[in-house]
Image (cartoon, rainbow, N blue to C red):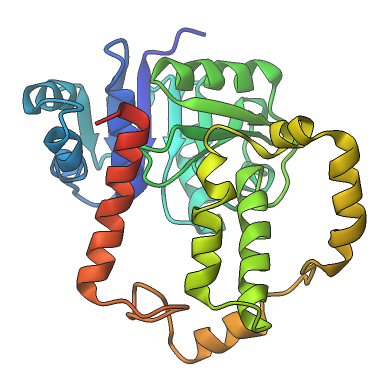
Length: 308
């Protein structure tokens, strides 16, 4: 299938960034649909300020890319009907997602590919009531969506191989690094690994082994440094299967394996320690520190990805 017209359903934080990503390929025409009037281009300009500041793109290049984005609040618009591929980026609410796709399926062509940008919800459950389920797939963009290269393409229990491969090709065409999740499982691929690490990190603090600052420092200045270059399974092959086996044979029995959130995490939630949002979580944060952390993350990503 020749993909030309991309529709983003939802013009919020992720939707804006995903729309910007697709403007990198001049072969695509991008439309954004939202039930609320949204200045998508203004949001993109704000998100791209650091890219311009660091010389990754110029203001003129950004403005030229923005000319390829249309916006509508009309579900019956031609922008909806002509879509070859739709990426839904609405609230993480199962009912809202199902209702959104039901409305879109009633208006789009039978061969239009549907994608859901969910980080946790099952594509199989979201697409449960659709007629053409073989053309439905998960596409989990990571935040910030305009910087993180990874997109997890998640097959539902009905997704066709052709649909998955077409979406993988489209994502590659806009510079993303798509990976295929062959089974629809909670957390997909990367979040399963990320939260296994978080569970152990929280457990170390909860059990008084180290404080939060120390845990973060231990990650950042050891294996965290090499992860962009050396993935865990390559690392296992590097040190050898026998050593990996021997280490696991000894240490796995001591690692955190609880199936419910940490009591410490529950206590923090009850006490209103909501992290950046409240100014305190595992650590205390001033508004200035929160702003700096967010800016530093983007600067780090730009430096890693673009050498700027």
